[in-house]
Amino acid sequence: MKDKITKILFNPFDVIIAEFVLVILLYLLRLSALYHPAIVYTIYLGSTVMLLIIIKIALTTQLDVLRKVKCLSNNLDVSKKFAVILIFFFVSGSVANIYEFTTVGWPIFLQNKVTRGDTLHYIHYITNFLMYSLVMSYFAIRMTDGVKKSICFFVFLLSFIQMLVWLNRGFITLLLVFIVYYEFLRALSNNSFKKYTIKLISLVTMFTMFFGYIGDTRVAYVMENVYGHTINYHYRMSESLPSSFVWVYIYITSPLENFRHMVMEQDVHSYKLGTLLFYPFVAPIFKSFFAKKVETYPYLDSIAGLNVSSYLESAYNDFWFIGAYIYIIFMSLMFYLAIYFLPRGIFGLLVFVSILNMGLWMIFVNGFAVGPFMIGTLLFMAASLFFDKPRIV
Image (cartoon, rainbow, N blue to C red):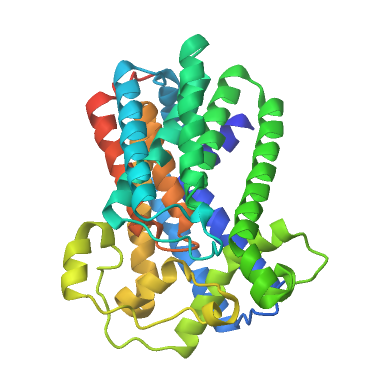
């Protein structure tokens, strides 16, 4: 049983397929009166998942995931090089964050927190290094003791607080995914799956509460002073449902409704031909030669402030209907890389977690075009190639 769970959990294809199927089913439940699912659209969504399943079977059938996980377990340690990189991320991220505060301020201090305020675009990439120090310091806390553990906890706490001031929920997902996988590895080594299950349930509960808290903090002002009603009413959902559930449900399912309107009601006349897929790598060219914004729009934005449309929006604006299938192929190649790096050591695990995190975000946006996510992945890849020295078992 443990081997079966391990093979599924450490295969990003299985995780993302499960996520996509779950979100599609939740969307089809139509718990919000804002949604209008259609049969043809549902078949289209199902075909993208089917392609991912076919690629998974073709690419990973011969991969020995269990052996890779055992190799990983033998290669996890806190080296001096790891500590140096952790300190670099924390210090540079903190300096950038303080500079942004003195220049544009922090959204947490704004009265109207919906827009999250301004950022210094390229400086904010460095500020997001705190997202990496947050994850790395958690690992260091669990792997050290005494004074070192206290220092790592201090770095973890400051990294979390500094990311929190931007009222952005995205940073927490990388930490959440890392905790799930690292604690699973510990449970695997110590044969303590009962404790792991309790921790996992607690973690998911806290994440849901945190997610709802940030949502309430950002929108409470507008709800109370502009609309004068609850978020349940705002999103056309039953008043009997708790607000934390409403936030999670709306956040993960509304992208599919936005894209339904795009693909069935809107047209694209000028396709981007891949510049949206590879945005982090072609950003300067994109801004110079493709400055015109995409032609589609999330129609729920003007109705309920729901402005994301999953990776499907970028795919549609890049390559029309076939864009979703092209994006699935690219996603699959990234997942294959995640499995390749997995056994190398702590940086290999961070590569795996980073790629999986981007895959999880595909239900909201094109996760592989989110600059901080891709930059972190590339940095962890470089660190793994230079510093990880895997011991094969």
